Length: 153
Ligand SMILES: [Zn+2]
Image (cartoon, rainbow, N blue to C red; front, side, top):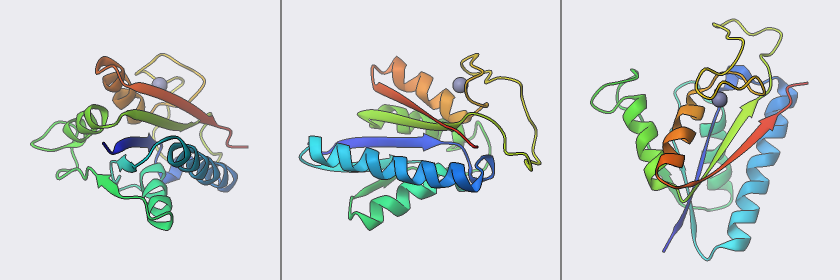
């Protein structure tokens, strides 16, 4: 059976250039380890319209010729026919293990809305992310969840 490696995390604008480099190296490490440990793997992610971890995971999987199972949201809304919520549940259900790649803090030039902590898990070790919501679902399905916190500086 194909072992599905889920990779989710922050969008591109949450990373500094250094954070982005670290995240890409980490994705390579995750894929290398999974490929060494399992006969056949596949990468599952959510094709975020804001880029970041989802897209870097896709790019690396393509480089490594690893098959993809991409869950693309059909509406850019949280709760819809196949919005972010439904997409996230799909990733949580389908992945055998889920890697959650998050940054520790906002980049200095970050323009969006900021929060003092992640309201999904009450942590201050990473900034708020919908990927954390996906991780909570994955745990409910009894999946292995691995957090990776990237230092942005
Ligand atoms: Zn969290």
